[in-house]
Structures are given as structure tokens and as C-alpha cells.
Length: 329
Ligand SMILES: NC(=O)c1ccc[n+]([C@@H]2O[C@H](COP(=O)([O-])OP(=O)(O)OC[C@H]3O[C@@H](n4cnc5c(N)ncnc54)[C@H](OP(=O)(O)O)[C@@H]3O)[C@@H](O)[C@H]2O)c1
Image 1 (cartoon, rainbow, N blue to C red):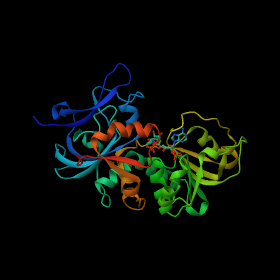
Image 2 (cartoon, helix red, strand yellow):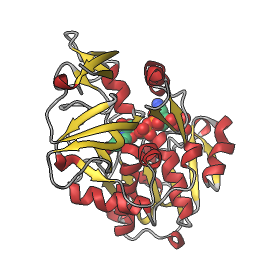
Image 3 (cartoon, rainbow, N blue to C red):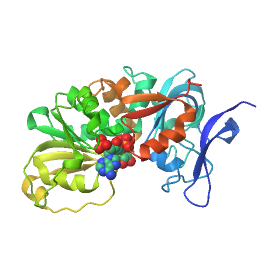
Image 4 (cartoon, protein in one colour):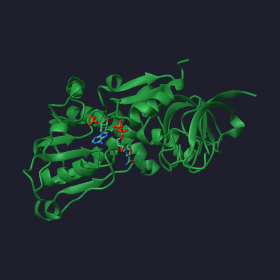
């Protein structure tokens, strides 16, 4: 019987504990499309799942990993055939259903997105859930009127995976991007992605007024907490914020004046949009929102480097994205 590599999370009486093992196809969750994984990215949520830091695994054992890009090996669904290049993420992948950290995966056809022309499998994985979420967020900000002539866009948690992709895409669209980071030693990296200005989170004065000087037409917030509260108070009239992350925490204090006096819009952003919406955003990521610096943003790692990758991510020692390349042995 063929066995293959997988990173599985086992019941430990708490939120689960992950390790690299071998498994067989018979042990995989059900689905009509079998995919040979080429690349799978490492996301904040994956580190939490693998290290049992949050209640994300909804069944045990669970193959961890929330996104992948690969090639269809076989399909019982007429929409796919062997050899098709595809992306799979969300819909419970890596939480309720076996995820991406395995040489082989089996998924419902309704979760599978054909790789759009213009992206390679590596590109799709380098973007992954983080990049897709940024795509949803930029799409939402544009639908709410954001254009480069309106003013500057702030991106916080700037060296993070999602933020790096956001800087790359927004600067490519002609926005004046201001990167807010805790790692000023990475200022050159951030400028190389297109940041026009880099500011230091450790020397920030967030102020205390209900409305501070209006500075930003748009903002990409992957940090939450005090930074989101500050952003809301410093947005220009009708400024738009895509808010999708909580790297610094879940809670923030605020007041209504930015909303009722400046019309500030906080656009809650989530990756779990329906399949048709997903295809539309992937299409944009392959064309008008296509990043230019994915090779600089994403680092290829081996499957057996996953435990180290999880530790580095949770300790915020990383910059950009890490992508497991299943061809590396
Ligand atoms: N809603 C959704 O559907 C969705 C989808 C994808 C991601 N997310 C969330 O988005 C966030 C970012 O994801 P990611 O994959 O980009 O994570 P990441 O690569 O770990 O980036 C997070 C960045 O935030 C900054 N940071 C970390 N701790 C901080 C703190 N205590 N205070 C202020 N800044 C801090 C760091 O950047 P600097 O050192 O440069 O400041 C870090 O690199 C996570 O919370 C993730 O769960 C949500």
C-alpha cells in the first residue's frame, strides 16, 4: 500500500498536538477530487493548529494546513480531470477536513478552484489564504471608492505575509503606501516591495483624542488591537480600512466620532467567500491585482522544516511568506 508524508494533529485532551507521520489514502477524508500537492503555504492559523494554541482542529487526527496548489490526480467529478492545476483553500480545509500538509489530498469538487491563467502553482501558494484575503480586502476598498488620488494607504504588520503582499499589490496599482512595522531592520525589504515610507511601530505615539489628524485614505489592518483603534481615529473623510487580522489581539477601544463626522468605513474582511467569489478574486490576483515580488516575499521550505516554520511565525521572527515545496526532499 502506498504511504505518503503528512503533518497530522492528534487529540491530546486539549486543542491537539501535531507531528510529521506517514499515512495512506484510505485514511484521508472523503471527496471526489484527489490532488497531488505541489506547494502549501504556512499561515498564522496553521501554526496555531499545529501547536495546539487555539481550538481550530474540529476532528482528530487532522491533516493540518489551510491552503494548497497542486495537480489533479483523479476526479469522480466531471468538472476536473487528471492533470488539471488547481488551488484548494477554506471551506473547513485544515480545520474540519484534512488539509494541505500531505503529498496527497482528497477534497469535495465544490472546494476546488482551477488555477487561473497568469499564475504558476508556486505563485498561487505564495499568495495562499493570506494573499487571497488581501485580494478580497483591496476589492472591497475599491468598491468603497478607494483610488490612488484620494491619498496615502497605511499597511500595518508590514513584514507579515498578508501585509507584504498588500504592499506589493497596492504599490503596483499606483498607491502611495506607508508601511508600519516593528522590524525597522527590514525597511529595505519593504521599500523593495514598493513602500514609499516606512515607519517604526516602537516609536509610535497613538494619541488619545477621539479624532486625530486625518492621514490615510485607506488602510490594510492585519494587526487589530490598539493599531486598529488608532487607524480609525486617523482616517481621512470616507477613508476605508480592510480589517482582517488580530496579530496583536482581538480587542480595541473606540468612539463613534470617526464614523459620524468623517464617514470612516471599517470593512470586515474574511477569506471564506463563496466559490464564485473566490474564483473572481483569484482571477483578479492573476491579472490586474497580480503581485510583482512573490519570489522575494515567499521562501520555499522543505516539508520537514514545518515545526521550525510554525515556531518562527508565532514568535514574529519571520518576514513574508513560507511555502512548503513538496518536491524538495
Ligand atoms: N480574516 C481572515 O480571513 C484572515 C485571513 C488571513 C489572515 N488573517 C489574519 O491576518 C493576520 C496576519 O496574517 P499573516 O499570515 O500575514 O501573519 P504574519 O505573517 O505572522 O504577520 C503578522 C505581522 O504582524 C506584526 N505583529 C506581530 N505581532 C504584533 C504585535 N503584538 N503588535 C503589532 N504588530 C504585530 C508583525 O509585523 P511587523 O514586525 O512588520 O510589525 C508580523 O509579521 C493574522 O492575525 C491572521 O490570523 C485573517
